[in-house]
Image 1: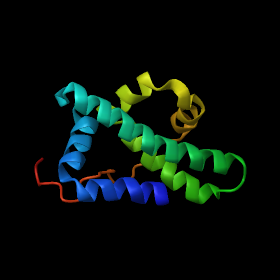
Image 2: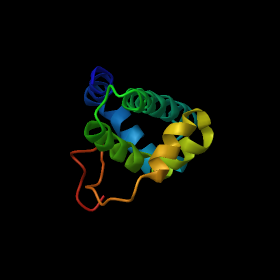
Image 3: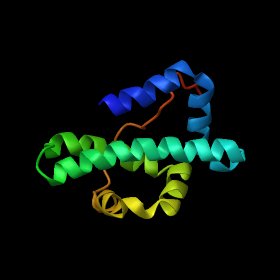
Length: 121
C-alpha cells in the first residue's frame, strides 16, 4: 500500500501530472514526447506494485479475495487506450497479463484516477 499511496500522493501534489496521466490513459496520442516517457514510467511504477501483489498471491501470501480486487482494477486500467499501448511495449509482465486476460469479464465501476472528473468529460 505504501507504493500506491506514494504514487497517489504525487498526483495530489501535482495536478498537472495527474491530468497528464489521465490524458495518457484516455488518449495517448495527445501526449508529447516527454509526457509519453513520464506516462510509461508512471504506469510501470503502478504495474510493478500489482506485479508484486500477484507474486505474493501465487506464493500464498496474499489472499485471493484481496488480490482479485486489485487484479480487476489493473485489468481496467490496462484496457484503456494508453494501457493497451503500455502492454504492447512492456512484455516483461507476460504472466500477469495472462492472468488478467483469463479473468472473466465482470462489470465493475469505472476505474478513474480523476475523482473530480467533470461531467460530460
